Length: 138
Image (cartoon, rainbow, N blue to C red; front, top):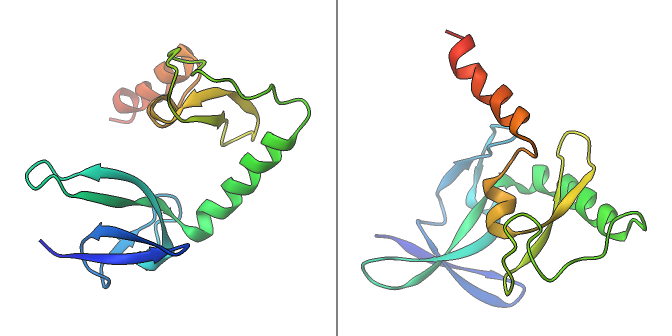
C-alpha cells in the first residue's frame, strides 16, 4: 500500500495513495490531481491501526463557493446561535457544523458532522421524491 505525507498549514498529514493519484470531483465531474482536493477527516486502517487523512470529494474550486455561503450564514444575524448539541440527533460532545440547503443557501439547523453528511434532505417528502426516481425512470 502506498502512502505519502502532505503538509498543510505546517502540519504533516499521512494520506493513502500516491502524489500522482487523480480523483474526479463529485460536483463538477472534472478529474484533478490530489492537490486540488482539501484534506478532510481522519480514519484508521483496521489492519495496521495507522491513522490516515482522507481527501474531500469536492475539488477546491467547487468547495470554496460553498465555504463562502457557510461563512455568510454564520455571520448573518438571523441565523440562530450555535448550539452545543446536534439539533437532529441530540448528541453532545461532538463537532457541530452549520447545516444548510445547497439549493436555496438557507440555514436549516446546527448538526453534528455525522448527521450533516448523512441526512441530505430535511423532510420525509424530500426523501420520498428522491427515492421515486429509482422507480419512475425505468
